[in-house]
Length: 359
Length: 228
Image (tube, rainbow over all chains, first blue to last red; front, side, top):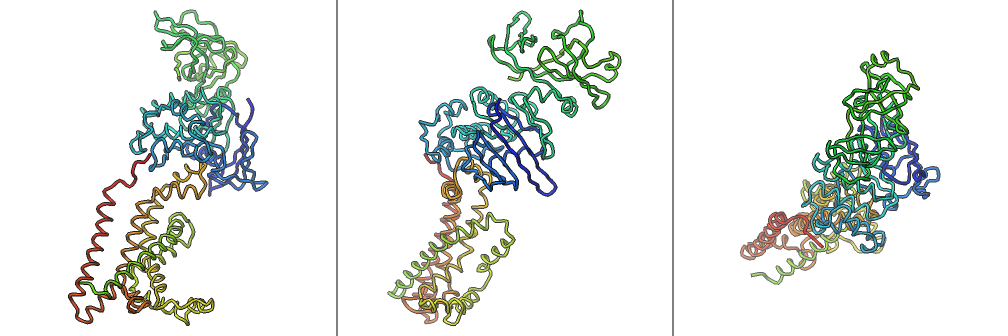
């Protein structure tokens, strides 16, 4: 993975200090995750040039957009980016088609040359082109906003909590489009969110921000398996495995998933064999045994190696294990840890009580 | 019916009001944009200055303008140095006075319209490669169109209706500075009530039509029409 985006910014608003130094990959979705006030949106706005920090350096695909040391600052409209705001911010005086073409006219491209039709198709807005923005639902508006940014074929796509303003149903309506984006797009996407579910579904790379600083950063599973984060996440700590559908067991209403050589059984998935899937395994759903359990109702029992142990809140302990090459987290009680006399390096068996499919 | 003098006065009124409206839109637009967007500490002072003509007796404004523009005033003196004629008691003086007198009626609707356009809409335009001027012409002006219409109508109508400032700075010169409102005053002074009725009734009908246009037609139509 090449580091196509280098971003260093420092600024202060009263008591809020913001100081980040990041190198982000040139493809896939990087989630900027953190509670409100952690600086996620500030980072995005700095990259877009909507904020101008006193000290800043930004290069995208080898092009320097900002370098305060040299007094260089490209204004927003000269940066090859796409930006999707929390509110769609469509121009209310233009219909959908004109909204989508607004940027195209300005980079001197004709709609036909610019891959307009594939973008309209990708976001499913073909039937809305004549409508005015006030005649669209929240979800439709956000899809138009995404199309309007994408059609410029930007070097980087910035998305600031694009689902936050939508209700649950609208979120479910848009997520499949974002998943398609993820599969079909080769430009880097920075995706700001405070929703764990969106990170789990969409992200390839994770940046965790806290109080204006980068707390952790790296490929998704690697970052999720960090014990300090797992401790902080407590009951929400989870691991993501990627794999594909290996086989269906229709009699039992089950599907077997292959994740890098590890087989998992899941409730039947309505998709053909070979379909790529993402599986989320919460640490609280994983228990460990010293010997292979020979009589258990749990289907997913796998051999594992214990690689790290950390005590957590309320008498809990977090374990980090590896199953084959895959990391896994487990929540057990501190008492169990002592009874089993767990040590780093132990060979164990993990029992996975529950898994959830993410896509 | 209307005499030749009456018609001359009406025509002059129309000329002054038209020119003043054009100038007001030209200078009022950047001023209103600045007032709507700035975080400067001078904002309050400027807002108050713009609003002054709303509360000042027109004769006060006229009096100070006369001093300012007169041959011994700072502006009048400067104009004489530059070889320009004096403004008081001329058509030019009437237009300058009208612009100042009607300023709040143009700036305030524009300022309200500009302020209603969210910062985020402008930022969205910037992320879609539109520079500041481009954004102003392709996003701000279309979105503020109802504000521009209101500003133009109010600016024009208010200029038509002025009296005190005109009398102070323009005087009562037939064909040159005698506008309709002054002509009505002349008729009444001369006890020509029938003549006064024709003009006054005309202005009343005009004012009502304009306001009806503003509150009736403009407000019932959607601010933005579908286009493609």
